[in-house]
Image 1 (cartoon, each protein chain N blue to C red):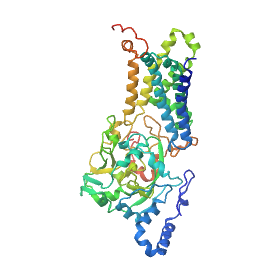
Image 2 (image 1 turned 90 degrees about the horizontal axis):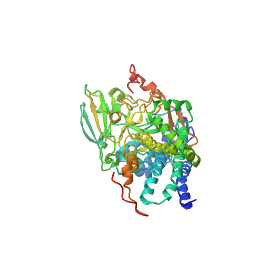
Image 3 (image 1 turned 30 degrees about the vertical axis):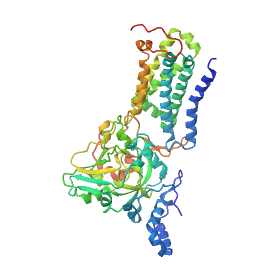
Image 4 (image 1 turned 30 degrees about the horizontal axis):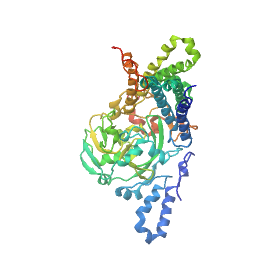
Length: 337
Length: 206
């Protein structure tokens, strides 16, 4: 049995088969096929997991990911009364300006990105700096599925089932010093495979840089993702490693990370450098603070049909107010947008 | 009527795009946010049609063929049609017919204000595009229709203020617009040579 998520109906979380049933089915199957199944188990398991969602294109998962798949904690965080965005839309409507500025450009151009081998530099105010091969970098972490709303600063939104681990777990590993106040992330810079970085007209000073205050990064909702829809991240969604901060506008969630630095000063982020009056460091989803060029009070939840526009009110902190509002107690969010 | 096949051909070439896009939208071929795609394409279509309309006079000067001028008014009216569709799409798909929000947008967003000014300009030109207005306005008609240069500037500014991160596409349209405006500067206009047809007497020294 495949679990199909219908495209436009309201599928509740309660409609999803409980994990225990899902796992017991696996046990039954596994037992009945005992001898035969052992050798083919990893491939079979990954196929079953990708099939958690309808119409998911299978990828070529790196072996470190396949090894972690069976122990993923599915549905660790979910959303109530929300329909998950179809895989096709989440992977063919992207902002990843390294691969072009049209929404379809990343899907068309990101195929050239080589995500294996991949290494991540950890530096700055940390006890254990170094350059890590991604498979070593990933070793300590238990992966979880987090189903989050994603609100783009351009006033559209999606609901995406990510696979990742909390940044707090990473911080435990790298041991920040007492001077560390912020965490800074940097995207790959490789003009050979990233056409957007070759454009002479780009307003962006590559590489793409984003950052969080340390207490924001420690919030349990903030994760580093390596997969979505039961599989590894497609290139256009920021493979192999990206940030996901669901209470902030999407541009905070930097993709294809090659460097993570703990720093004492607030990092200068890419969009701040282009237009500080339009994009702040915090970039918390806030329906009461407009972007200078458009309102943030509403959003188009995609897919939004031509004759059935799916326009809804934007929620404070993208609906994660209970979890994150305390981070900003005493701050004027009109000034610190 | 002269050039009937040419006129009908231009008509079909301009009409086919919005119909094709609507068909694509109905077939779900425009992705998850078809309203936004339609509004963007219609806006760009308006700008392109404006540039094409503005190139008819230089082309006529260059080639001496009267067919260019025969379709100039039609192209201008197509430009107006596209901008009407662009605005309708904006009202329906972006604003969701929330007219109170339109008031907010009109008072707060410079690119919306510039866009609306450009639209009002095109409206004035479309309304006075008929022969009756030409006769009635006489010499003032030509002066009024010089508004089109201002409208081109407004349209380019409108697009510039929407660009978020890459100016390449905008630069292409802006350069074409700049060339078309330069060709209107009298000393340059006089130097446009005719490639076909009879030779014009050599230009007077400017």
